[in-house]
Image 1 (cartoon, rainbow, N blue to C red):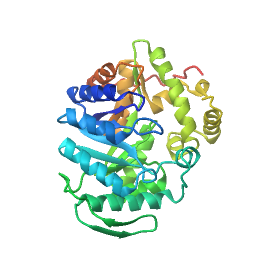
Image 2 (cartoon, helix red, strand yellow; image 1 turned 45 degrees about the vertical axis):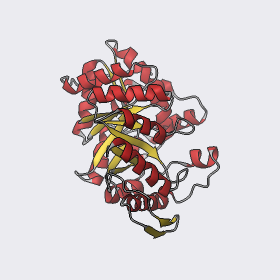
Image 3 (tube, helix red, strand yellow; image 1 turned 135 degrees about the horizontal axis):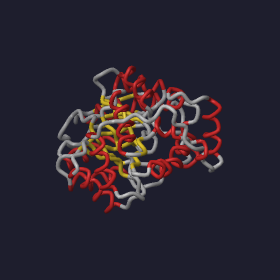
Image 4 (tube, rainbow, N blue to C red; image 1 turned 45 degrees about the horizontal axis):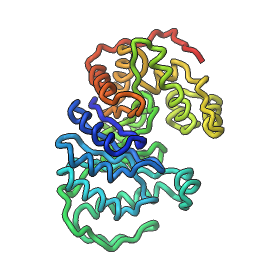
Length: 330
């Protein structure tokens, strides 16, 4: 299993570029630039990062065909390919109604169909040839004015629903899975998409000699994202019951994440947290489940170089499973 690093949209541009260079020096496979609304724009940061790095892949993780027309995404991707010398990876997602409609006032309907058409348009335009496309969501009669270094750069889907996973299995080069993707969920996705597709997933990492301190740092984040996911395949596959999922969901909706419900069992499922051996065991379970790239989640409150060093060491550490009788404190 290879390592990637996600760069938080809360970092300023200079810090983001510096972190990317650290990731390249540490031997990471990919640096991913997130784009949450209304944080920093992914393509601008990716271009700056591509200009000062030489080896590491530069991933956009992810953009959507609501705020950007697929022709514009193709233009941006082709330009990033030029700047990086053919190291770009495009992450494409369907977004969600909360961001698109509630925050930005954009109608949000038939996301899978729109995502599928956007994928077709972007791929066709990246060939450098003129495209005549008449779809239900997009109509394009245009072509890039230049030829990118690669006609088929990798496009992965950042999706989590069953229909979207089927689309990814059929048409994408891989998947970028959500934060809190457990080993059982990753194994389930691997079974759907087959052995060839590249699977990457965001992974929350926290290591300390004091295992409780390491775990406590992640409890609020886990409570928040379990609320975001709610009663979903991600949580159901991990074994959470509907009542617990509903409690996390309500806490998130009330802007009061249920940190009190995040025990050590949930942390073992959804993060790599605790002592070095415990975190190594968690990463080992992800690798055994079929994960190709563990994308370490950035934490602006933690030294990124320390996070990268720990992640690299964990790949070499002998995994030790946590005790079976661990219950944790609620």
